[in-house]
Image (cartoon, rainbow, N blue to C red; front, top):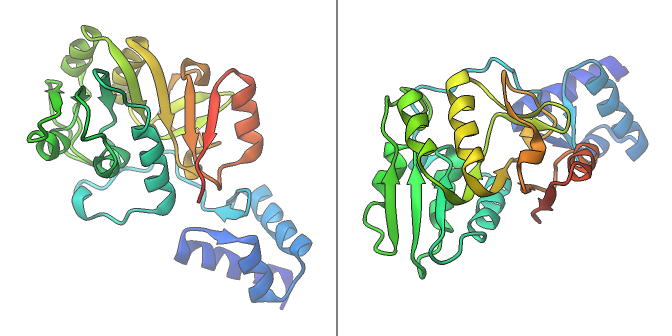
Length: 258
């Protein structure tokens, strides 16, 4: 098999599975580890994928539009997302006032949120509030404003931003479209970025929850510099070089285990 044919097969594997490991490339094509890594490096240089510690993931499109209808309660939960959500929930202590992200990680965190202590949650998602409204140990607030009709139906307009500007949070558990050391945290719309800035500015401790796919990626609109966050929680496949750069900026990087 010619190297170009092998590269096409690797991209096909990546498209079908959403990720590919060095070991899988080595085994499928009966090549050395060094050759497998070289193949992935060449494809990365051609901007066809992004390498991770143990393999590669697809490049995300900056202008990707989220699906209008997403069934958050029945979505597939990836191991890295679950591990990040679990670690993030461990930061919540008794009597804390917590902003909780409305993204998929917020819904995954339902399984891990403390049920034996009292605390306050502030949400900008009606669907997530519906899941939490009967929890006896939680005081629940939901921001006001226009509900977006895509993704998890979050609320991030100017009314929502004004709402959170009048609050103070002990902990901000936030995610975004992408993060890297140079550009910082970024997201897909100006509304979201403006809302997130207001939450970040009013939080005593900012914690960023970012799966490996979003490390080293830049979404459309910059939210803030990465050192606005005290802690970054990511997973075992995140780009090591990027994590080192982020850590050098004073951010505590926590890599969850598989």
